[in-house]
Length: 311
Ligand code: A3P
Image (cartoon, rainbow, N blue to C red):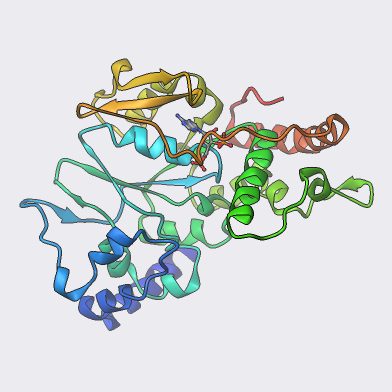
């Protein structure tokens, strides 16, 4: 029913908003979300000329998160596949009210041009923890295939902290030691957003209200770091893609300490912001965090009928 109501809302928006109006609205996109290259596609004197035989379509699959789970690595690795076209940017279409009101036509415009034999994939890591995204995505396409990449939730908290730490440094804002954020008045600060985002059971429940488990493929983010190919092969099967990603598409870069990608005669590693060293965390605080998350992890394993190798 909820899915139906949102569908009706979207339909009404599409009827009332002509595509040209929506394109103009796209000109005011937030530059922190869209990269400048993509935003340039919307300028009036640089109308993009699509490659012949291609079109823009709403995605067949969305990588819904989790933030710091390895979403960029997964998207870049999937992009190796000749039958996959990936979106150049995170759109946040389904969890921001102002974007959502612009309608599906606008969203489609942000997708890459793809050939009929290709599937389109976008990633927006914030969707997994968004209260609104599941219902809205379901209203757009109730049979969409969802990809969710998760890693050890304790590691994810530290990774989340590290990202915010570096962002704040770049913006000349004050930073705090991780322990000061994890602990308040001697107890674990479970209101800390980085912890909240690691409560996988809580967020998964929200998705399972709108999608059957079979429609959400969980990629093991820790396994993807250790050895990407098997995880990518599972994704190929889930998306009904022919097996095209092979071991020679990956090589281990000793300096980076991560696998990098070899495809179309090019070698590339992820941006330096991916795979940063983490701070060491006080042992007692770390134990507090692990034991708090343990029960949530167990509940999550029951929900998804599968276990993960998390400490
Ligand atoms: P860290 O930087 O904390 O190590 P996301 O893209 O969702 O923000 O996830 C970032 C995480 O992807 C990184 O977190 C890193 O551990 C992980 N990752 C997985 N495979 C990677 C790869 N091949 N290169 C770099 N980082 C990778």
